[in-house]
Amino acid sequence: MTSPPPDPATALGRFGQVAGSVAQVVAPLSVLTALLFYFGYASSRARYLYFGVDVDTIGLSTQDYVMRSPEPLLTPLLVLALLAVVVAVVHERVHRRVQAALTEAKDADPKVAATGRQRVQRGSRRARAVVLAGDALLLVGVLLLLAFPLWGDWAYYTLVTPLLMAAGTGLALYGRRIARSLEPGQPPSGLVTVVLSVLLVVSVFWATATFAEWSGRGAAREVARHLDRLPAVILDTTERLNLTSYGVRESALPPNEGQTFRYRYRDLRLLIQGEDRLFLVPETWDASNSTLVVPMDDSVRLQFRFVNDPP
Image (cartoon, rainbow, N blue to C red; front, side, top):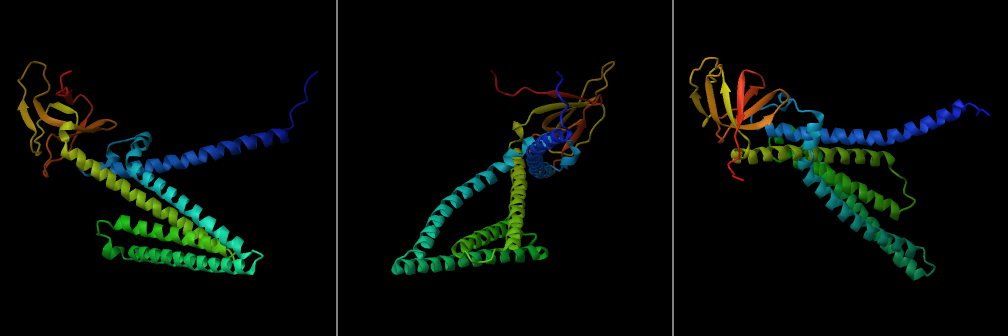
């Protein structure tokens, strides 16, 4: 016996279920990849700009930026994790007190109910105080945002402003939530909650991006303090480079038949390898130094020296 053909409607429904499941997995992964790419790009851009190199000229791939993102994101993620633990502990205690106060307020004993109502009123006042504190911090952050033409040159502006706005929106959201739980008849403010939530996400994103830039610049300074830790390179060229960087030694190669390379440069270090070029820096840092861009073709010859550490 031959089985009846599958119902097109059933097959279409199953396909829709599978597509929905795939979309639920792919969409978060795409967002996560985009975030990792952005923070890796922000950190790398600040890092190589310290050496005078625009990161877009290096030719790093999306995977390269994603792989470089954990370093600048480690500290913000640890801080957010610790804050989440603190908020969870505080919320658990507050929730227990709120439930206890609401239970007492509904007790059959008038004295117990009166005590419970007093506790509910005190909790409501404290919740409103938290909301006011959050609104004040948020207002200070907004004022700093509007004062960018005056305060934009402040070194900590791009970190203090989003942190104030994030703290303010977080306190305002939590205070409103506790107030609603203590006053069940209070109408919900859905629009305010959505706006504050979006503002919280944007502020955290801004602060994290700022820290990623600072992390890249700090990593660049650490590399500049120890340029001797980078791979050592000996560069041979067909033409004289007339380098202005301090500390790079130039010597003429002896002329030989068939020899196309005429000059040799020592005391260079490999900063990073791009898609089709190398970025070299002098072995010692100096304010007058510059980054040398070398194409990976037959016009140059490179030798990478062993590390001075006998096995």
